[in-house]
Length: 164
Length: 164
DNA sequence: CCGCCCTGGGTGACATGTCAACCAACGGGG
DNA sequence: CCCCGTTGGTTGACATGTCACCCAGGGCGG
Image (tube, rainbow over all chains, first blue to last red; front, top):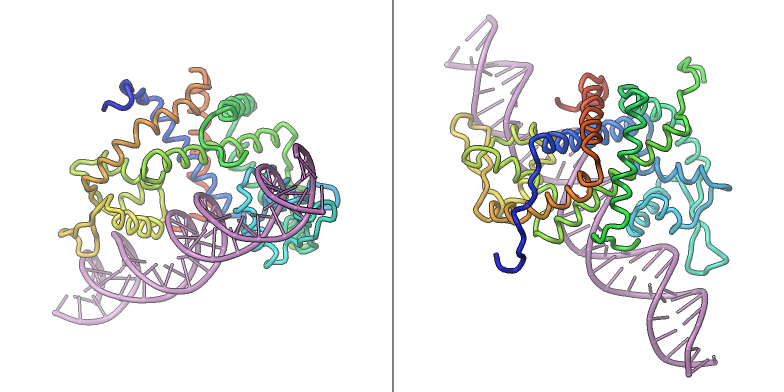
């Protein structure tokens, strides 16, 4: 009561509340469908998939761990755990980094390459079906601008950024 | 090669790829910020929060478990586990259901009510700052339509729906 | 060359989510 | 009234993510 002279919070209007709930539900459903689909059709998870995407985008299929972390925007701890699992599944390998004794490289294996090549077409197809097909060209443009706006607003945000 | 006569997949155009990546990143950042914020400022998680929202929306703060599951669109198993944790933390209680011997009610405790009342204002404020403030009124309208479109497209989708 | 701090990365304990199997109460057909 | 499939809900094993802490190599001032 006395600590912050905070005025009545700016609650959401009914229209805003509708958007927020719809948006949350849309994200959740989209995530769930994509995750389940890729898991069932291929033998890899979405997380595996996004790691492999970076690996195939890069010359020699070889990246430093921290660069991966930045590309995916994952915490290094999460990445470390996940990479360990992926090694166990034979999707990637690790290699020492001669330039920096602390560092280590991640490289994609043949099995990894096969896995993502098998998964990608069906995944893209579903992204198209669920996400792009229902939208008009205009809406695609609009959504691009909207996403950029929101993303931009978060970039300079003072909120908890553990390690940027 | 021979099993499916599938034509070359409809890969994403550069513009589409840009949208997709931006959209994914935006969602991820938004989630992360909201989750971390609510966790640090209050003593509850986003998951706790969304359960409590339903509980406070309902007369007597009492709901059947399955109704909760439908409202949140969570799998019943996830909900069951989560409710158990929330009971342990004193946020909710359970009560027998006299009408149906199998069922059980969930009800919010005083501590739960206090927790969500403390968390809500700051949470809404952040949703506003990160999500609504950067958008124009027009964009809010556009995003509402877009979300509804995508959501609609998923509703009749034959993809894996474990228990709808 | 040394002490110190920073940086890249890993680890363990724990919170959370998923899948599949289980179980008891319902409830309708014979 | 009983059998049996369905429904509401829980459980255990396991996959994943988070936090806090550890640790070795690098690099700089003295």
